[in-house]
Image 1 (spheres, rainbow, N blue to C red):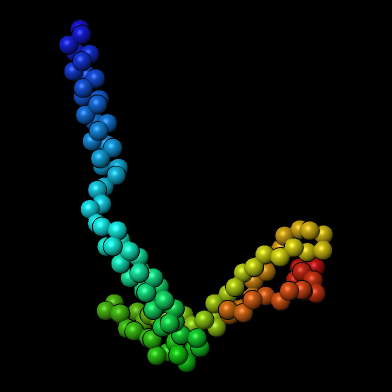
Image 2 (image 1 turned 90 degrees about the horizontal axis):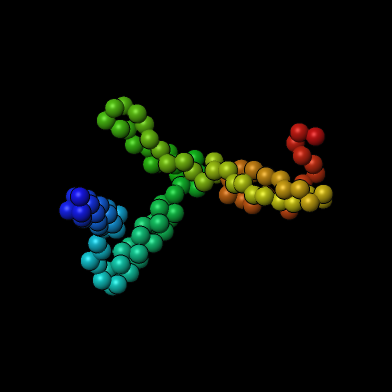
Length: 114
C-alpha cells in the first residue's frame, strides 16, 4: 500500500513539473535582444501610422486586388470615428462619437435623442 502511494505521489509530482515547464516557455534571449525586438515593434507601429492614408484620394492608391477577386483598401483617417466620455451638468457620463480624428467639442447643445 505504501509503495503504491509513493508511486502515485511521484507521478503527480512529475505531471505537475511538466505542466509548470509547459506553462513557462524558456526565453534564452539576452536583455539586448529583447530591447532590440521592442524597438523593432515600436518602429513597425510608427511605420503603420506613417503609411495610413488621410483622405479618400490617398486611400484609393492603396487598393489591392486579392487572388479571390476581392478588393482591399486601407481605410482613410477621415472615415475613422473618435469616441470620448464627458460629464454632463448633472455629473452623468456621456459617450460622444465624432467623425474623423478630431476630438469632440468640449460642450454640446444637448443629447441627440432629447
